[in-house]
Image 1 (cartoon, helix red, strand yellow):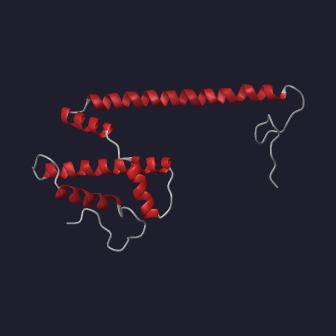
Image 2: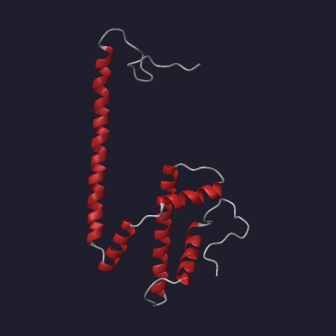
Image 3: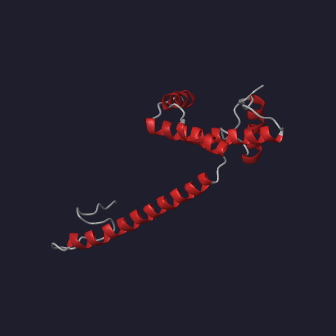
Amino acid sequence: MLSVPAPGTARGTPALGGEDEGEGEDETLPAMADDDYSAQLSWQSQSKENMKVLMDNFTPEQYDRFEAYRRHALPKQAVRKVVQQALGQQVSQPIAQIIAGVSKVFVGEIVEKARVVQSRRGETGPLSPDHLREAYRMYQQETGRVGAARPVRAKRIFVR
């Protein structure tokens, strides 16, 4: 049988009679929250410092690509519609936003690999579909199967 803690008590601590019962809890919980908050602030400041070091070492071309990457996003409604069609059920907006974020990272990885393919071939200019196909093939070799856990009948992207 489940036991529900009494109002004003933390889970797993017995209720003590009297007015002192809330004071001990107020003293411990804010201290834990302060530790978590300071740890989060520390992590955020370290993250900002790391980003600054990274951006300081970008070439102008890399910086332009990074700025374009930061400015653009996959349209959430379109992502939501594609996911709903694939799953055959409704998907909430936050889930569509998460999938859009993961998809943006995937697209970024494929584009970076395509740039490597392009430079290895000694070519310049915009990426061609052939660069993207080769980048996707490399990605599959590195990570294994992409997409579904089991291969869907002859489902391929970047088909010639």
